[in-house]
Length: 146
Image (cartoon, rainbow, N blue to C red; front, side):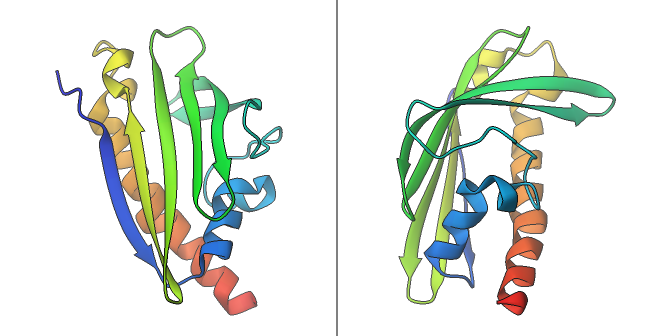
């Protein structure tokens, strides 16, 4: 079983302030990520959201563990009715007028291997789609509109 954290990095042609808004403001998050009505980037804040995957709905239950504006946002990530708890970390690195985002998702092995939607390869594919497609399109649109 692979116990190494999943790490994916991408560099975007956008300032850190715009990327922070994308990952920490619920109105912006719902445009590329999930619609999380009760999200607040405040340490200790608990939030939840439903997401569908191939006909199954999963209630995500999370708790913000760290929020440093324009630098780092992290939270726990678990599923109602399923074993395991993982941890998601977004780190932002300003590089001139560009920003490098490093996403780390650790503890994926705690979800086990009996549900294919909760296997590591599902997360690897999902995060790549979120960052390479959804976030890229969102940021391009924001840059054009601002």
